Image (cartoon, rainbow, N blue to C red):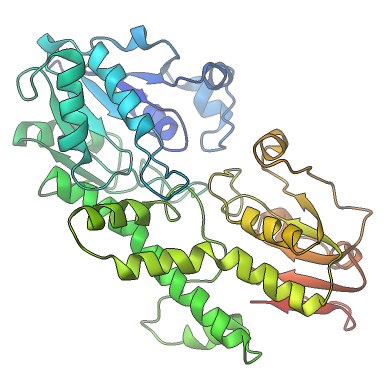
Length: 422
């Protein structure tokens, strides 16, 4: 392989774009996305995900394209497309297969390229589904004409500390040569170094359990939250006390969504069922977390005793991130609506058009209005920093202020204001 390999990153979302920009500082890098509008805005220096600053994007030597023909003849293909679940919570590998077929058409067997998957999958997908798909689509032979690798993505949206340039990258390949090739490439762009996994399946499995572990831990806290609510004890007060123990794990309750924690356990449970194992703990955690929005809505409805005008502040899956994918805030909204509440929604950083288009909800500017129920669902900076008078003014006389994330716990608000938290 030449000293400066030609790299193509397929999929320029929260994962692919930061990786492609980092690689472009050291290698000849093409960033591909099927969304022509996405490519156009990136060429203009605008990243809707907020992961890359405009100045960094404009200064990057990366080549951006929505044309598959521009990706032909590369040395490394890195697939970073989404891997969601379908309506039955089964793995949806449609984007991965589509990207795989695109790569198959672009391969120059004389270059013997390496195809690396970063998308989260269950163990076996890279070698047992993607490899054979390339062979079938292009009439090529794995090992002779192309090789496979895997390096699980670890992007944490909105996190400026654990960026792709700083984290440890797990790498795996079908042979030692591929592993060392990936060690050189990824090692050149991160100060966190690389970890050589024992196999591609081991690397795939590591990614799956990283998020499943967090999901189960949060599910535990969500479950005890529901238990303590029955005796009138706030879980935040319990956590304050428990955290004084040196080895207590400080997970917090809430609405667990997003494209990783809310999805990856289903990939792991799918594998378990394929091999004849009943994944009781994994699915129990998912059931608890998936049901949290409904439980909160029911608890608030019982407290109010009747339906009224409600405002939900925050719709993204995580604070200070515009990503709406798989956000469980919408579960809360839908359940309140089902219970008869007239629900208004607001979010200071999410795309208003996406909320209206994908969810049929009209985004409001809450200033100047008051509501019977105000729910702080996502701890965006704007909401954490709301002045006391503005926060109080949102709640109508006799109304309830619900603080799901404990972001207003220390506020000395009007004593007559009905306040509720987890």
